[in-house]
Picture (cartoon, rainbow, N blue to C red):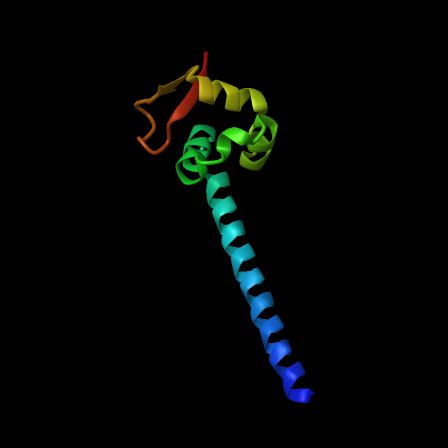
Length: 98
């Protein structure tokens, strides 16, 4: 009986370790997304999860990305301009909505 419980305990330990590792990976990806500009957040999500993205409500997508629903609608509709200032580098672009 003890060996049976011991083997079950190890399995639970592995399960907990896997859950923690997966959650840490999720948090790391979420932190990376939050470091991007709104448009780049959406495009990254679209690249990685485009298969089921059309079945998720915009309010949930915008909440996950940390942007307003209106901003997401503008990004999806292409109603934005990217302006490069001479004072900023290419990696520091301003996105203006018209």
